[in-house]
Image (cartoon, rainbow, N blue to C red; front, side, top):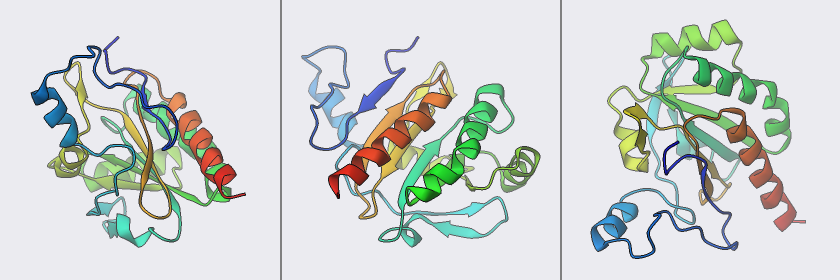
Length: 188
């Protein structure tokens, strides 16, 4: 298990979780953490092609919906398929919570199209072929594979939670739903 597996950054306002195992993390490690999107940051906007070859901008959803943005390693691999199907199976719950699910990997559009069709995925899959967005968000790698990270972003574009677990899939769905419930509870 990686030191990064099952790593969570909490909802804003709850106790922070140290991202390094060592309390005396070097200043270069601290600088590297600043290069990635963190809880409390405004999410960077971007535009990528979806599985239908249409450009989708993250900013199109801001002010309208919460966003569950999840990065995954590769279409049609066992854990990635399991994760996508778990999001699919809970899609109505996410929609009822006012959220849109957006999956991102470096697979080309055609791979996403086939993956979505084969598994009846009702949500958006974006193609980040060059990994530019993955790098902008600071998504780590684990064991040489692109990381599996979920960002829960509120309607205002603030990153409320980040969950990283390379070897669990359903937990990404559970963490996202739990965070959306907390956001909802804050406004009641």
